[in-house]
Amino acid sequence: MSLALTELTLSHFRSHRRAHLLGDGRPVAIYGPNGAGKTNILEAVSLFSPGRGLRRATAEEMARRPESLGWKLTGLLRVNGRTHEIETWSENGGARLVRIDGKPATQIDLGRIARVVWLVPSMDRLWTEGAEGRRRFLDRMVMSFDPAHAEASLTYEKAMRERNRLLRDQVRDAHWYSALERQMAGAGHRLHQARQAALAALLEAQAGAETAFPAADLELIQSEGDMPEGEEALRAALAASRPRDLIAGRTLVGPHRADLRAVYAAKGVPARDCSTGEQKALLVSLILANARALAARDGTAPILLLDEVAAHLDAGRRAALFDEICALGTQAWMTGTGPELFFELRGRAQYVEVTEEDGVSLIAQKEAP
Image 1 (spheres, rainbow, N blue to C red):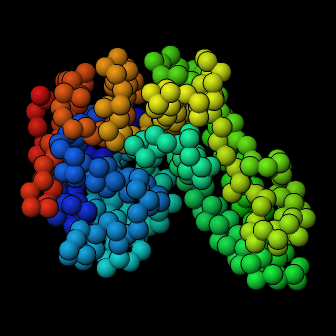
Image 2 (tube, rainbow, N blue to C red):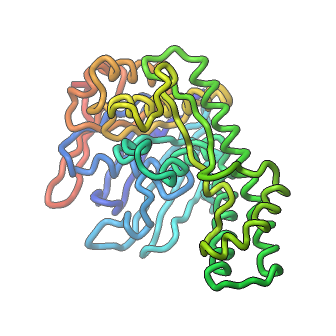
Image 3 (cartoon, helix red, strand yellow):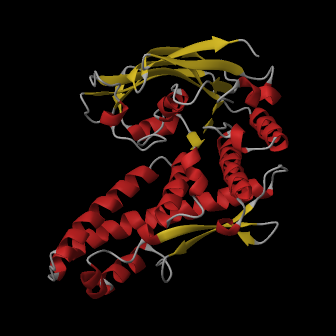
């Protein structure tokens, strides 16, 4: 059972005027100088899953400049012996569109075919910055287990924006709130349940693996109080919170107030208090646990995107990471400034060199260094 992107074409995407890559299911080591366009390739692969990709950019921001005509990505996804042709594109800054095997599709449809998870340098500050980034990190993993999580999140956020508008306008008529709170309660309960299920799967995957990376004790907490258990309890809590919310001008109860707490299990130290290296190792551990959990559930490991991860690990942990990737049988797309960062992968990976000339990224598939 396997999942791999076996062909990728980028057209007018970021710094790539046109690029074409062939994959054979092995890890892909992408190297070249900073600014050459390596991360842009990973971003393109991330768009073979639901959402805004690993940079959370708008469709307009992804277009190659100065043309800004729009962009298109085409790929062949091999899923357990069956190949799907995937196209996703945007024209003139418009919404991202998807076509699967020649037929119009939604991003949720895409999520049912492919699972893609990633780790990028901006996540290095995950444990020390605000709760929003940790929620986004968790929800990305949740979506890998349950693509419909994205739809529940959009429903909740849309209803909450409308409720917050009423609060800011100091509207006090209960009838205006009731319908929105019912929507928020239904979608919010689904969000909370999906997050709890994903955390349970991650903890189980960590507990059942021998790995060089530290396990993390994980807990979903609220910024204040407890998350109401059950749809009706959440609806009642929203109604009861209206007076307080009117003063604040925003909604103070619900899954949007959740936070992900992590503790370095072996040391009993909160992730926020760990060293920089330990924090990075915990992130790698969670990404690998996510992959193991999906492989155990579906028989297929997700595609992994690891941006500049090798440069932040010592040689021992780097070798351990590559060994775990190969043992999982996952196609991992990784970037680094030079081929020496992937020395421990020799004979087990494909190599791609990325260079830049006059603002255009150029790629060349290479033999193993």
